Amino acid sequence: MSGTITLTQGLNQAIDEAMAADDTVFCLGEDVAAKQGGGVFKITSGLTEKYGENRIRATPISETAIVGAAVGAALAGHRPICEIMLMNFVGVCMDQIVNHAAKLRFMSGGQTNVPMVLRTTTGVGVGFGGQHSDMLEAWFAHVAGLKIVTASNAADAKGLMRSAIECNDPVIFIENVISYGLTSDDPGKDHRVPLGKAAITREGTDCSIITYGRTVMDALEVAETLEEEGISVEIVDLRTIAPYDEETVLASVRKTGRAVTLHEAVKPYGTGAEMSAKIHEELFNELKAPVQRVGGSFSPVPFVALEQDWIPSKSELADAVRTAVNWKK
Image 1 (cartoon, helix red, strand yellow):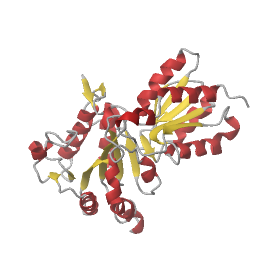
Image 2 (image 1 turned 90 degrees about the vertical axis):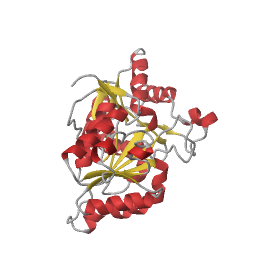
Image 3 (image 1 turned 90 degrees about the horizontal axis):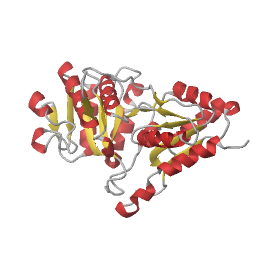
Image 4 (image 1 turned 180 degrees about the horizontal axis):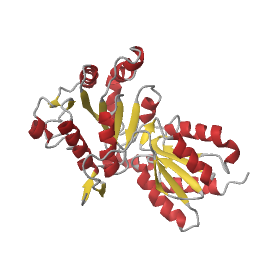
């Protein structure tokens, strides 16, 4: 192990290593092959040259066909990695994801698995507009049979992707466009991060921030600021959104007595609401304050001029932690 990798390189390495180790792994999606540049965000760059166009398959612009083909291939014994270029486009293929990929293991009495990964990108802050920027993880977290994953750093991206490819259930792997350039120490070949296991990225004693993906960086920055005020913040990076690591979350909140949930997706009806409900159910008598929630504004993502005002801000997060810490029962 030496040097650093970007999140883009981590994903590319994980797919490369998985394809080298298992001939049943292949990629399909719009623009993923060499002739189209190795993907819009270059995640599959260089892989066509190694594995050929049969295993790096550029498809027509049809999300329904991409996911439908992936489901069929998974049922037939392959491990497809399909790409839906931007997360908002999953609305086109929800039937294939929700009624087929997620349910076929259950509807077959466990006789069939659907070992596929659906990669998709999203994120606010680069001016992509309302139809290209939504974090829609709560849609899929509500569907039994799906696993939902996102990484806050390059090493975790590599390890989570490798585990997702090897999982026998369908995994939605969410990437954030702003995070592709983030760097981490190279974890080396065959690195894996187990699905369903959170990480404590910062130890603290006064309040737990529970978050995932890009907003982990915001939480770390806010925690440093609050440290100067004498507030010690613990940060839980879920890594797997569904099923999330309840044990680690509850242990952290039990220690600090306070919690703030944070996500880029709109605040109402979000995954933070589910975690808040669980924390209140399990730790009601131990909480020193009600759980606070921070998320995006409940509106379509605006274009450029108002976009920064839509994003949950670091000052809003800091105020939520202060509210929890200063709460008087």
